Image 1 (tube, rainbow, N blue to C red):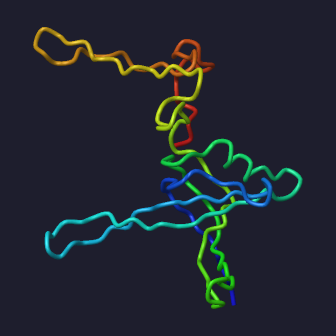
Image 2 (cartoon, helix red, strand yellow):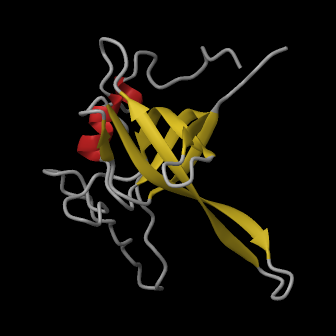
Image 3 (cartoon, helix red, strand yellow):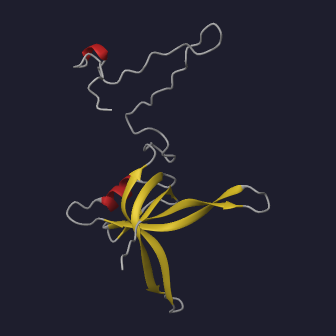
Length: 170
């Protein structure tokens, strides 16, 4: 019987990462949205799902938890890959067995630029964002035709075949 335990999510951190076991691991809260149809209003609504996540520094090159602790903050949007883990413990107050499903993060990617300050919405330090250019207008109020973008330093004359695409097999 085959098994697969893989989780891929896009969401936001609900709290700053915390150190686990003297820096060997990190834990943080994460939220994703599910869509639900509201019968009363007839509209679709976002319903948040709150998850607990953890990650560990594993192996010789393992620095994932350290990266999480150093670069992620509450509110930041990321894509994460991981697997489900059932955490089980005995409650100290009543002695009952408790359990909680959590995500063990194996990898993550930033989905927005790292900014300075609490919002994390700005560009990385030292990077000046490009301002969108306003199209130039002609006398009739319509945008003037723009030249085709040039990629790299190539134009038809500098290409080896003189810009001809006769050698393309399709």
